[in-house]
Length: 224
Image (cartoon, rainbow, N blue to C red; front, side, top):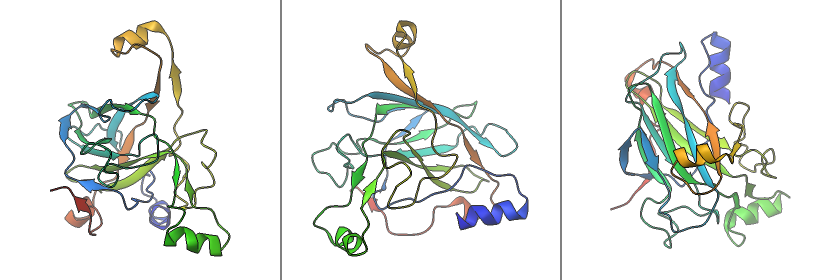
């Protein structure tokens, strides 16, 4: 929020708001072009299709941008940390097409809380706070010449949407969810029942230097 505020004060055009990365990113997810399916089809949940364009603040599409996406399953658990899930379930890296477009099919994630017996929740209990997070989907979005974007969208309607213990809900990151029930749309997507749809464009700012094109340096899990 402070960094975005500095951008606003400088008078530069605004990009997509930034927010937290969280601790559950896993590097090396499969790389696909244009369109991806994130889930491994082993879990029942509402089908979600999310799509949009990665573009510059000037409105130009960015072909070949990388949309690195990850989220929890319907139990609020992440692959790589939850050993019951397949490797890289609900994780992909999507390279945008010639028009800057990306799309993925997945299942609607669930919100979750800190482990109730863990030290983080013990600290929150001591200061009278809950440890719940609303349902959300994480993203790294990057392209040569553009500043690396760390962000997430939050799922509208979640009871903790504006009561996130991590304070990660931001204006501009709560897109509309469309209920798609007409047979034509269902057939066009190769589905057999209704699905949910989110359209969301990512807007990247030009990078002042090469370092700004990279994620913040820190240790992250990479599956062997």
